[in-house]
Amino acid sequence: MHILIFRTNIETDDAHKEVGQLLNSHPLIIDWNIDKEDIDKVLRVQSTANNSLEIISTINQAGFMCEELPD
Image (cartoon, rainbow, N blue to C red; front, side):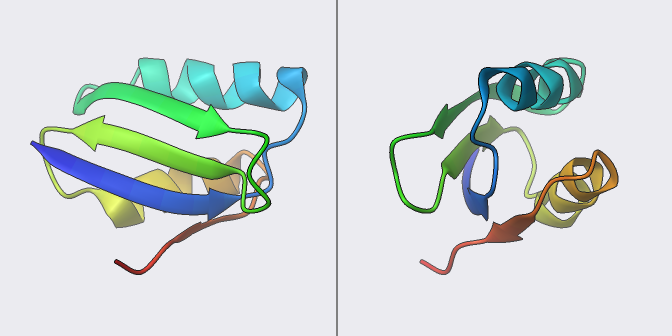
């Protein structure tokens, strides 16, 4: 199991729902959450693989900023 952590610009409920639909349909993602109160709008993803680049690409293609946070 992998825990992946990203900085995003996902602030609104509509954006949260849109990204949620993408993440919920991804076969390798077990669970995820976005801390909209955090300044970095932190997205935490629990995945069966280290698929950070794929997640970043998916969210960027939906029109949102997403970058992996360093450990």
